[in-house]
Image 1 (cartoon, rainbow, N blue to C red):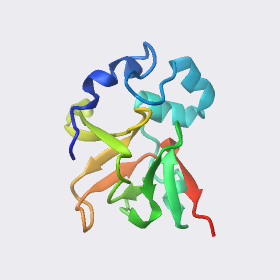
Image 2: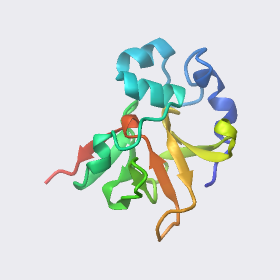
Image 3: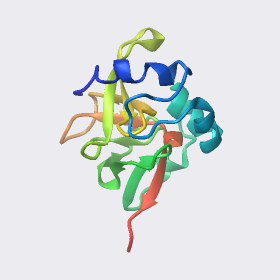
Image 4: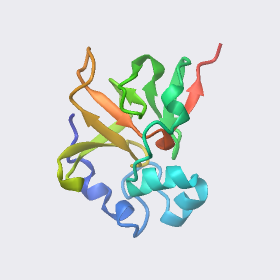
Length: 153
């Protein structure tokens, strides 16, 4: 759970709704994100919403492939790292290299580690230390924040 504090200064303007996410490869205004994304993806990626558990079709996605950011298309997780956590959200035990960043989240009267897309800064979910081997981590992601790219045959 490295890089917890990397995003603090970079993401301020994006999450306050005052402009583009400064410092990210993909940077758009709030109006541009709203036009580009579905309402659910916009609320999750740009405003840290959480989708209702057990509602994402990606929860039941079991094909070989890659789960990518719905905002910028960056590959985030291999299907080989996906597991059924029983939480109702797609869960993974390891992101792809250089795919995500983390930051401290003290909302809802608790301390958690928030996970963001490294390229656009979009909110993906949270990571917890109650996952399976080999990492012991559970990256609990919002399906609305991702798209699935099936492996080519």
